[in-house]
Amino acid sequence: MSKILQDAYIVAATRTPIGKAPRGAFRMTRPDDLLVRVLQSALAQVPNLDPQLIEDAIIGCAFPEAEQGLNVARMAVLLAGLPKTVAGVTINRYCASGLTAVAMAADRIRVGEAEVMIAGGVESMSMVPMMGHHPSMNMNIFKDENIGMAYGMGLTAEKVVQQWKVSRESQDEFALASHQKAIAAQQAGEFVDETTSVEIVERTPNLATGQIDLHTRTIIQDEGARADSSLAALSKLKPVFAAKGSVTAGNSSQMSDGAGALILVSEKILKQFNLTPLARFVSFAVRGVPPEIMGIGPKEAIPAACRAAGITQQQIDWIELNEAFAAQSLAVMQDLHLDPARVNPMGGAIALGHPLGATGAIRSATVIHAMRRRKLKYGMVTMCVGTGMGAAGIYECL
Image (cartoon, rainbow, N blue to C red):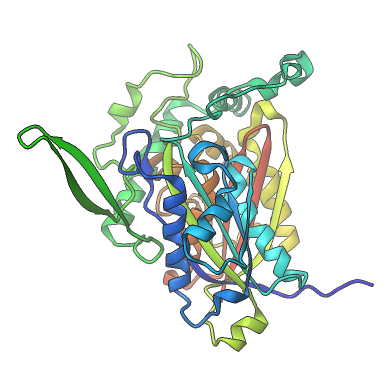
């Protein structure tokens, strides 16, 4: 017998500022501490909600080892002081980990298995490098039929450049626009509602006293956006992934540190605790594409998510398209005829950063709060994913 799905609502959505890796504000801040901070902040946003009702915390992380290992989801739940009855599980779909966590949490509610769930993501690219500390790949990926799996992300972007004929100039222009939009949004206070500040303690040796001086400062803003970015400066950067390529550090996403968290509930809980929903989770889709052109993944996931939601692409008012590389973002926009005015209106990962497994949760907080401020209806978070995938999730502002 088929079962009618119930709706899942977001009642809290927040994120840390995004720090630059490996030398930014959070270079010495443990990722589990960043996650603890947003978990506590999200709960504080719904003081009427009984935390004993939280079923599980699903947390995305692209490289869940070392400081973000040991099932970082459960560790952070306990460190955050949540009831010990709240479980925790860490999941990995690389760059879509945080968004997948939200979708999985929503599904638990939609099928009636849970009433209250936490979803989120965390990544410290300062403490855990790309590929992790001890990568060990199956040698079969180097066979001709699998070789796309062995390509680094930058090389896949160069493949997209070749197949979609994306010019170096258009990539640099896209990158500059990302910085300009991010700076404008920061100056207008657009990120304030979604951001939870993080207090850090810096330790420096005092040669005069022989002691360690402690300095406390509060991080309130993303570090990556550059007001001094220019086409002239971007055009001087050399390609870093292919000798005659066009993908540079300037038109690629930044390595970053950060965390995000959302609280999702059923309609029953909304009414029981008199909660105001920020948004309704509408749909999620993930699709595979050839690994060597992994950046094109959103091209397949976006239409699938729209079909699942029963809406058209033109009804999406705000699209957070993760800027892994300018090249793949432009290719996706070109093939799907996305309206540039609706794509990353406050900048994207090229300016703001891309803390891998946290990005889906972080950008979900961005789109939810942005839609509420501007009284928009539908918003989307979408990204390409390593080894050839695309993911997309749709939210409805209520």
